Image (cartoon, rainbow, N blue to C red; front, side, top):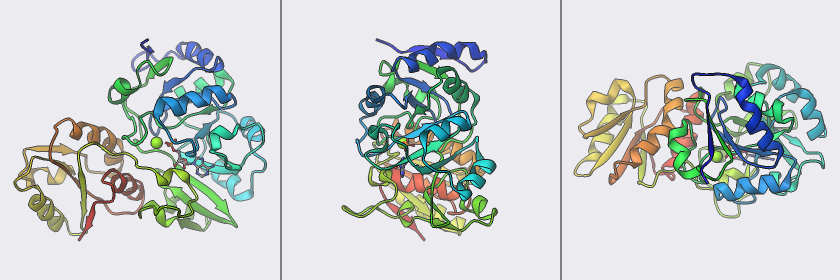
Length: 343
Ligand code: AMP
Ligand code: MG
C-alpha cells in the first residue's frame, strides 16, 4: 500500500501533523523533514515500532539511532546525567543540528542503541519535526531517510521510490536547510569528541573554550575489528552505484587539470563548484554551488542525480576540510569508498 502523502510546502498548517503524530503513537513509521536531512521516525520507547525502522532501511542492528526530542523535560526521562559541558552545548546549540551521546536510562530499548549503554539525542530546530514530536508526545527515534548505504534524502522526490509503502505517512516539507546530517559528539573527560562532523563545526565548539578532539576515523577508513566510538563509521554510506573518485588540491588549477585528465575517454559525470564548471570538457557537469552551505545542501541530491546517467565514473571536486568543509569531505570520502586523490 502506498504511503499517505502530506504536502507541507505551500500550506504550512500544523494541524495536518496530528494524523501522522497519531500514527507514531500507534507504533507506525513516518517520513518527516528536519533541518539536516529527512528522517524515518518511530516512537523511541516502542521496541516493535523501532524494529520496523531497521527493516525499512535494511540497517545493521548494531548501528544505533538518534532519538529526537522537543522539550528539555524529555531529556531528563531518557538520560542518567547531563554534565556541565553538555549543558553549555545544549544552551548554545539546541534546538539545532547537534547530537549529544549520553549515558542512557533503562527506559530506552536496547534496539535503539545497538546494545550500547549510551544514547544519542538531539532537539531539531525544524518546526515540522518539533510539532510532530510534541503532538505524538513521544521521543522519536529517526535515522536518515534512505536505504542503508545510499545517499541521505534531502528532498522527498529522491527517496520516495525506495521508501514508499514502507512508512504510513510522508510529510513533504520541501528541500531541507542544511543537507548533511547532524554533528554527533560525546564528552569524555572534559573533551568533546567529534564522532561525526556536521553543521556545528569543531571551531564553533572551540569558541566556547571547550577542548575538541576529532576522531581520526572521520576521514580515514575503518579496519575490521578496530574499536569505534560511533558504530555508524563501520558501514558503507552515502554511495551511488556508479564508481566515484574524489579529487582535491589547495591549488584550484591542479584540481581541475587532474579531474580533466581522469575524465578522458570515459563517460563521466563531474560534480564541481560553480566557478569551475566552464573549465571541464566532460559533457555532463553538475553544479554543486559555490559556498560550503550551498555544497552541503546539494551533495546528496547530486550524488543521486549523477547515478542516473549510468556513466563509467563520477568525478567530484573536494573542498578544504575546515568548518563545514569537514562534514562535506567526510560524506564525499565515504561516497567514493575512500577513492580520494589529494594533490
Ligand atoms: P543516522 O541516523 O543514519 O544519521 O546515523 C546516526 C549516527 O549516530 C551513526 O553514525 C551512529 O553511529 C551515531 N550514534 C547513534 N547512537 C550512538 C551512540 N550511542 N554512541 C555513538 N554514536 C552513536
Ligand atoms: Mg544515515
